[in-house]
Length: 186
Image (cartoon, rainbow, N blue to C red; front, side):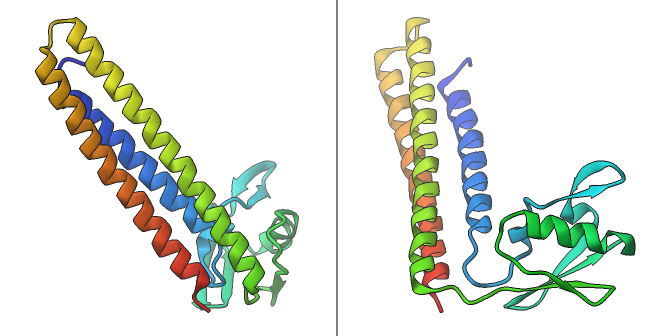
């Protein structure tokens, strides 16, 4: 890193990746509405190798309570059903020979509270990552200071880092607020 601006640009890139990861993790927390992301972790055995479900089938949501999985190869219906059952997601797939359907049961109030806790935990993990990135950026600024950056410029750099960090913590909290609202909406 040559300059404070480069450190901050690198920090922003890493924070953006952190935010994207958090958003993806929130997508995996089901809120009672059907979402193809619910099946992202499902792996299907396809010609001897484990393949993500979304690479061997189309996953659609015909309505808010149903997932429809249409395999590209009809011979995969059984292996897909087995993979979904074995994934411990709590889904009971059914098929009509062409399409596998999964009905998403309504979520109980207790389960909703558990899902909110999971979302808060994921948000906290994201904030820990953000704080670690702040520490790393500030250490890089201190190295620049040892290499000749003035104390005032180092202080200004640390203030800029903190402003960026505050912005991304707010974005993470906004994501959490949105997810909580989504989970608690019946």
